[in-house]
Structure formats: structure tokens, C-alpha cells
Length: 131
Image 1 (cartoon, rainbow, N blue to C red):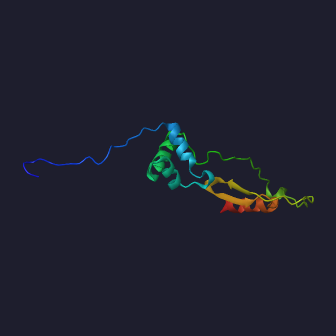
Image 2: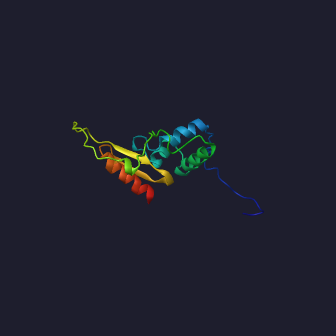
């Protein structure tokens, strides 16, 4: 560099895209669908993994995205221990068990098979909730 002159090369065109919140939401929501990882979704949309995490944070802040989106919450009633009685359930055909996820207070999560005994489930919930 003589006389203060600088040389430079243009290596490529800067690629700066604008993404609407709807598109960001679609990209963020694609993670986990059919087992898709953040890396796979980032490659599919030609963005970085860090961009997906940033969009996730931004959409949460705006109230547009929740990690529980699509989750189904069912009411669960609790019976005091004194009112529990042991009753033999009627014989029924064995149905295939499905996994159930129950979210309790303080961020606790229970995962159990759908064919769990009601009494055992009540005891398990009480034990986890008291811990």
C-alpha cells in the first residue's frame, strides 16, 4: 500500500433477506416436525442455526410463539387420599398403551403409559408434587 491507497476485492453480493413474522414462525415451528432438527431446518431454509434460535427468542418476546404450541392440555382432578377406595376395575380388552405427558406445577413433568392404574397414578402425582 503506497500513498495510502488500499486494494480490495468484491467476493460476492451481500445476501440480506427480510423475513415476515409469519415466515419466521413457520421456520421455527418446523423444528421437531417429523423429527427435524434445528440444523436440518436451517439447511432447508438456508439460514443459520443461530438465526432460528434468535427468531424463536424474538417470537416468544412478541407473544407469537410458545414451546407448548400444539400441546393438548386436559383437566385432571385430584381426589383427597381419604376419599380413595380400592375398586377392582372391570375386565377389559388390552388396548395398546400410549405415552401421556402431564405437566405439573413448578415445571415438573410426568411421562407415563396410558394404561397406568388410577391409584398408582394418583400416588405418583402426589409424591412428585410433594417433592
